[in-house]
Image 1 (cartoon, rainbow, N blue to C red):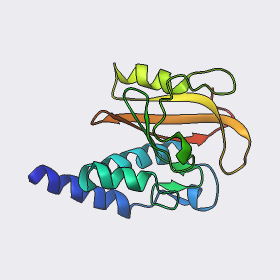
Image 2 (image 1 turned 120 degrees about the vertical axis):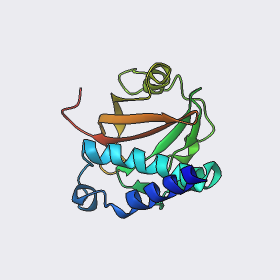
Image 3 (image 1 turned 180 degrees about the vertical axis):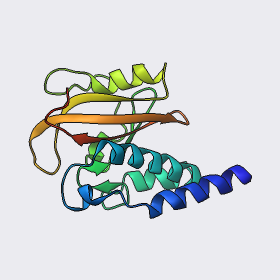
Image 4 (image 1 turned 90 degrees about the vertical axis):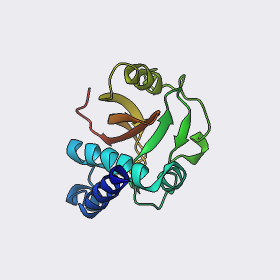
Length: 158
């Protein structure tokens, strides 16, 4: 009970904290904003429950999908559970999904999640705002058997 109340209070605090002006003015989110978005998503998941949270993460007009700043969720087997910008990916196993350079980025995240609770990965992806393939720097964190991921497009990321 106390744990639920603490999680709910944390979710409310995070929901009240703006993600910053970078996202509001159309610029790519900063690394700090990306981490905050993932943590906000996990807090929401803890307070709202899995079903409600997954529905919200899949909502292209929801609180976790603002242009380049969105959360997608995969299980630890590589199955896409939520993706607000590309709903056709939901339900697919993406372990073999590769970026234009051939990098199997979901497999790399899944493999890394077996030995650490969070991390960063750079790969190439089509930017939903510019429509161009760009370098994406993604932060991921594991909670409850799910990998919560958000990122930012950064031409200097390697």
